[in-house]
Image (cartoon, rainbow, N blue to C red):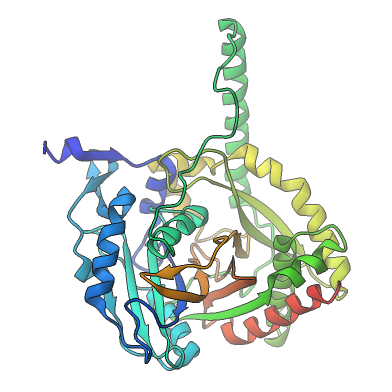
Length: 432
């Protein structure tokens, strides 16, 4: 079998940065929470056959190496190391909850629960009581394993209707042949690329230090009491409403989140900044073996605009102009090395560049099932980090945009925020 070192694979810079960023008070993990109907290991009354479920997952796990690898130190770096998977530890039955509010409360607690590092960085919980005759499922994943797009692949693998693995990531199409280049020309191009990257790095590092927004309750030390709330919106209606002014579903989500944040500040008598800058991940090109391949788009969401069409049009113009630039810059420069990531982790606890995280991930194109139990609903819950107290994540699934609000409960009321978020999404849909 060889030595343990021979079975190791170095983490990519992006994956390793997510290990360094992790902290006891800010767990760098996210989750997918859903509701399962009867079928397979789920009985008609919501009974769970854990033995059958674990047996079904044991047949699927070898399809994805990350599910059977833990993170270990390899000198000054981190490496993936293959270990036996103890499904009794990874697949468990949780205590019953009281309906969807109970599931939301459980998710809030899980967002501040550290993941064990002596085994692969994932777990799957079955949660009775989320709905009559139904069982909730919570798949929790450390961010070092996957970003949003990669997480959807893991979900499709573990909850696929056929139990087969999704297609692997592929490089962009092309003939695969690089034309010959003059060595001097290549050297000049390489030098220009390095200089552009250096300039971009200095610019974005300086931006983190710049107080771009006034002091606000949306920023500050993040406490241990979290709030999570779910919101659903019909996907086709939302897309139709957004398209009337040339906007996308992602633009609609940003517009609704900005309006909900503004309403939350107003309801608490807090000052409202001229803009609410949001950090929005954008997918990069081929990721290879890395679980993380995202750039960051900064979108200054406008405030003080009551007309939903005008606000949405302004946001659509911003995202059209900024998305390509975010992709060209790639991963944030400071997080490309361990030393830079340590510095970044300290800086972001005091930054005033962004006030929220917003992410929208394309979901599976077909309905999923866990070992034969149909997945009826699902919501993604993303982490809050640094001094940013609010995050909204969305996933398209089964004709709906499924959103989850995650926030510091002592700063922002998750439930009332979710109510306004739902209302604002309805306003966009009504544009059609």
